[in-house]
Image (cartoon, rainbow, N blue to C red; front, top):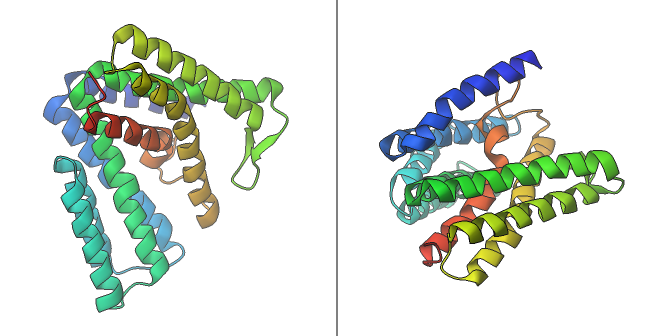
Length: 256
């Protein structure tokens, strides 16, 4: 517990000032975090099937480009073409590995691109995302602890309950709606309702997706970069899908 607390304090001491400063500092943080997260995913996959290092290196380059280039669509398409050539042209990887690396491109690359776009849009919008996700996770944990009886996904995450998921969703949705409305973050009420309903759901789905990967590859944590906390993916999993939803709302002009 002591190690976990010390790590959390050090991590917050570094991350919070960078989030407030924004700009190139936050871009640098996202590039580093995305690089580590992609490496964690690929190292995890290597436990089941080894892949040529140069292929993993190219995937990593494309993840970095997705985060760095505005929108990231060109880099994502380029990464997909690369995987198709390696799979069907050179036959160096099988269909399962091809699918996994494409998931890495989209899941990691676009999620960190989304976090970058959200912070670039406004600090308030970034806080809206992080606070909603944290509140959802926290209330899901405590609701499940006190009244949870029915397992949500016992094969993926045995401790999570349906009651906890509902409690987390209600808490996150109420906070998201009240905060978004009070700060006038969105262009109309429907955008706010979509996010208030969707963010807590996607936050919990993101957590389950990350847990499913760990179950499949029989690992406890994605990495060891943060003592007591695991890796980057262990810290960011709940934010990833939720960030993508806000990113979509930004792209369609739904954010003030």
